[in-house]
Every structure is written in C-alpha cells, then in structure tokens.
Length: 114
Length: 117
Image 1 (cartoon, helix red, strand yellow):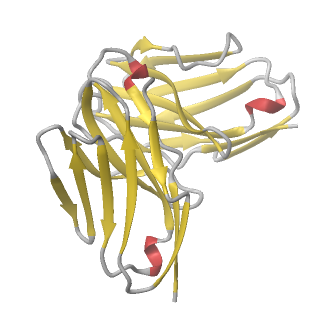
Image 2: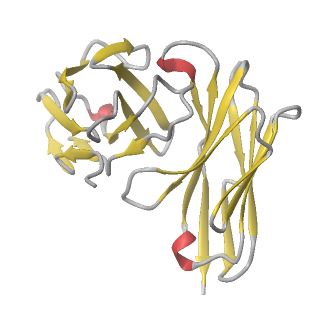
C-alpha cells in the first residue's frame, strides 16, 4: 500500500535553532518527492521537488535530502526564524498515470518561539 | 504576477444548498488540480485537469461533487446537495506539465473555507 508518513507530528523550537523533519514513504514506483510549506490560512507553497537521482536540494535555509534506497527524506531548516512557523507537508508522486499518483503526508506542525 | 485566484474565500451555507467554488489558474499553466483539506484527513486530491480535460476524478468523493473547466482560465467545483461532512478547505492549484509526476511545482490558491450547517 502506498503511504507517506511524517514525523514528528508537531515540533517547537527556539528561534535561531536548527531542526529536521522526516518523511518516510512506501510509494512505488517512485517519481518525485515534494516538500511544501503551508502557513495558517494560506495554500501550500512548494519548497523543493526531488527526483530519484537527486540526493540533496536546497532552497535558502531549507535543505531537503532523499535516500531512494531506504525511501526516506528529510527537510532541514537552518537558523530558524519566526516566519518558519507553519505546517510542512511531504508529497510523493508515483510513476503512474492518473491523478491518483500523488500521496500526501499529514504534515509536521512547526512552531518557532522567540 | 497573479497567482492562483480562488473565490469565495469563505462560504457558509445550510445543508442541501448548492455550493459553487471558483478558480482562476496561473496564465499559461496547463494542469489544474482541486484539493480538499481537513484536520482528520489532511490534503486529498479530488480531480485533475490537463489542457481543460478531466484526466482522473477518482478522488471525487461521490456524485454530489462535480468539476468543470470550460476554458484554460476558469474552473468550478460544485457540490449539490451539500452536507455538513463536506465542510473543509478546498484548494485549487495549477502547474505546467502533466500530472503529479511532472517535475514542475504546483502553485496553490489560498483556498475556500466551506462550512455547511
């Protein structure tokens, strides 16, 4: 069964600290993995998209890693800011036709406190 | 550049009423997606259009839901009759390329918060 699991469910960190969010998946065959940031009351915003051959991809203070062998991805946030407070959603795409090739994690709720 | 535009931002209506949600995708994008988000189930893909044609509607929960894309710049999601369990935030997204396995990012609107009383 194709699934995406994220951990932790929620996380509170101090401003300026680093943190790492995890995404494990069982989706097969794999096409790509996306990380989205969703602020409260807003739509998700794409942070990174990684294909099978990519191990690391950065977007400013956000760095995503992908291990296709173990089917794990992480999102590392460096020097956190208050504006990083949001939900982070991992989405894995299967290499198959049709709209039902997208599998969603339930997200990690990150709170950055001063 | 204008992003994906959804209307209305909020909708409150009584069960049994017809609800129509609207979406204007980013100009030039050829794929459009409708999603539903709830606390219990997270984000769920309802339907996906490519070049105005519905490609897969397997995520549409039941016949009460229907979606149309009459042209490249407009889409609607309709619920008739509405029920309290339809209460959720509905997002529209657009992208270049074809489907979820395109490596192009999806651009989301800010959603319609729907409450069915």
